Length: 520
Image (tube, rainbow, N blue to C red; front, top):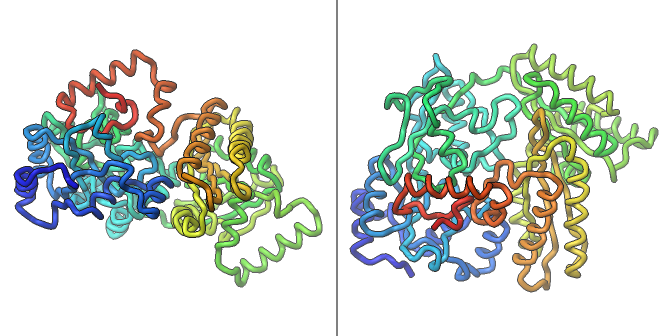
């Protein structure tokens, strides 16, 4: 039941011109907005166990910045807590409600997806001013109609929003060419408890390439996870659609060879292809199982690969790995990059397997979330978790983390063998982002989601012990908040708390994510 009274609900509806469809206390809306996309969220929904977590007391869909301002004002007057909501694709419990012990006030989920307009496109300066509630797929489509790309393509692009990308400090698959979200976003507008926060002389449609005007608002908001206000719009960089887009797949006989290849590609600086991803053996085989049957030239290439494997014994189906490459740019740029990549691949004994293999590996990324939820029907729980790792520690960290997961699984006498795999997804001069995937059978296992969570927490502990980061781009939310003391010093933690108290003195945005999990 909602904790809101009739008068409070009436005031909420008044903010949206009494549009009955834009304020809901229905169970299904509250459930969807009080969960995300972790395995635990999906398990709770599918097992009918949502009574174990707190859900928001109401959901409101705002359409304008003025409505957001009015809502925040009402929250201050009525003692309400607000949690901004984008696409709901978080895997960190970021949209979960704090318990009534932590947060006794009624909680309102603020759905931003009606704020989805492209406000302006500045072709001369390569900028677009966009409302924060637009989904990635809609934004990409609208920019394509103008002849541009946003360059940001996370796994969740179908549902995640621009505001969500900013709030979690997201990264996309093509960051080699276009950068991470902090490179793409040029300025932001945020409605906070003290009013609209913006910069650049109040001209919301423009942004400067670089300024030296003190602490930057974008830096303050990136990774803020809903703790500081409601992101309403942003000016982002856009690029002309690349005239040439090509895919390739390169097969290596071992993960060590593939890792050497990835490390050398990372040294190419601006000449790196838009996306370079290294799939370990388990993921490579899954991608091959899911791709369409090869025909024509692709069939011939696959036949040659299998023949080569039998004749040389170099490539084994039990050890081979695959790098998937996406090239974007002018035809000349792409051809130059392909030559450089082929030369590096040859140094590590790589076999160029063709575009169909590369495309299958790239597309597998978008299918994994659907596969995970489908597998739950057959008593399998699965999840992904990521980290940034310095090059000097990548191989050791991957080996130790996989081993830790298997040991934790054995120690609990769980059925079957776990599927443990990884891929390298983003390359940097100093290291790489590594994704781990863990899948286990939970048939006849008591409290399986909790058991899974314990093993995942052990894996995260191992990752950090081996020199990996707490997160590369998924964010912290509430799921990993307990480890933030290993990230932030005591002095910095205190300073963040004081900053939060200044920006949001009444803690209207009391979502308690990340460093603010224990906000006093």
